[in-house]
Length: 427
Image (cartoon, rainbow, N blue to C red; front, side):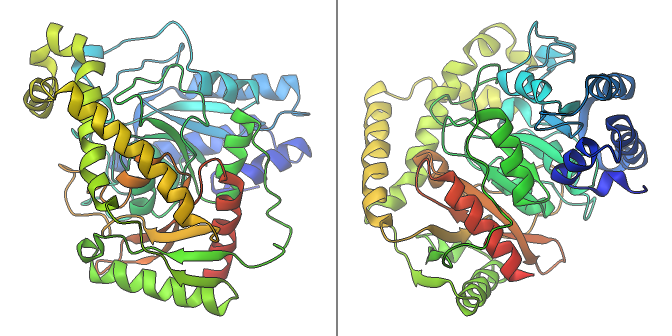
């Protein structure tokens, strides 16, 4: 079979378990694709073809029966520890650093028979300073961040699965920019042991793939969350709240048009679509999220700033000293505002299955010096809610645009099913 690198993770697992293909053949196809495209896209911080093949041969020898991820390749964002590969956080401080142990999510991928292809490029400590990765749809544009390498690698068929993390918009935005599916689970769904924290009350491990089914499969393998039956017809079409948010005027005309068109199309397909307005005072959450993130980041990176300030980016050297001075009472009040907003959102959301809202303000901007704006992601991250972005169109320059579905906390299966339904309805 040719083009094994274009198979979905779910199809790879099915065919390996059926004995139609081998894990070694799958990994070899992805190695060939990486060799072809990596010089242009630069998605990988570390890649070792022989190590990946050795993992695949071990899976083939062991047998695929009972392995939820049998032979499926996975890219790991380089703020997530790997015991047998460098973990460098895109920081000169950690050049060549090799942790002793795998992060929980990496260990569980291996236990489920998945293949860790390598480490994907991140921004510095999953913050703002980007790496060299480019958008595979147009190399002159950013792939987004901070999970830059995973978004680009999945989009360019270098891997069917990739890990991201999200403190503001670092899984959903690069997925949208790169035209793939991104899933930020409810806060705490994927165990964070072994992830380098930037803001511990916000940081969420997420996943990227080219289908909703693949995202759900990876999280199912790691967490035992029930895997939705995507082949079964839903008992009813979803109840969708069209949430433009208070910052709708900061979305591009193309994004606004796409969301309006998407809402109309889904309504024609049977969904109950109604406008949804966030409760009064929710606009303040944009500032609340940033204050919390800054306060916690200054403490998470205290050792790096105190011992190696010269090896930090100018952005870090400038912002960390300011952030450490944020008064504790301001942080405590922000955390209380977040807690009360979660309760108020749950009340307002009653009667809806998901919200439809922008994934990003626009398509990926030109240049790789910046990774875009997390405006339409920060509030949902702060609220801890499950979010799924699916590709749904193109912007003025022909780059991908996504639409985002947001659900109630811990109701991830419903959000995944609604997103999958929408993806089919929009085809």
